[in-house]
Length: 155
Image 1 (cartoon, rainbow, N blue to C red):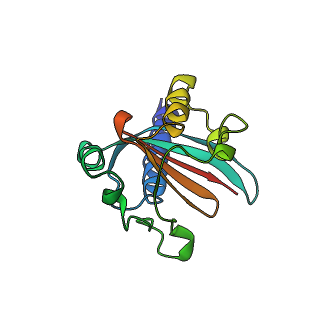
Image 2 (tube, rainbow, N blue to C red):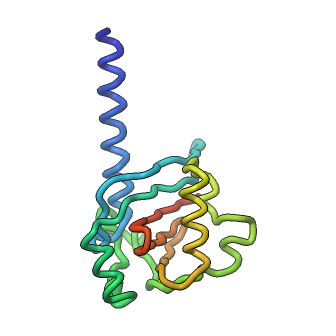
């Protein structure tokens, strides 16, 4: 019984650590409340995956009201001050056609999120009304209509 308790505590600690690590890859202006899916694959030096979060009500309302203006300047990850945490300026969807030419884009294709959630993300990525940014080996898509924030990474 003690071993099971220790395993559950370790798993819980890992989940909290993982949430905070991935949240740190988002600009501070983008509020999130909890993860819907965090998954991926990694090897010795490289990996790919996605962290999909529920967007905070305040962020969703601000993005819906102000659009891309709300995201102006939100180009630095909250926990990565190096150039590696710097994103390009935000753009409105649809994402470039080459992102979805193979069904989904790098990073998201390594996610084990359920099909329903992935379908919502891919549909929103192909329509106006959501916003995305990229950096070397990563991207963020925010979908205010569904209150979703999708961070994907590869490399």
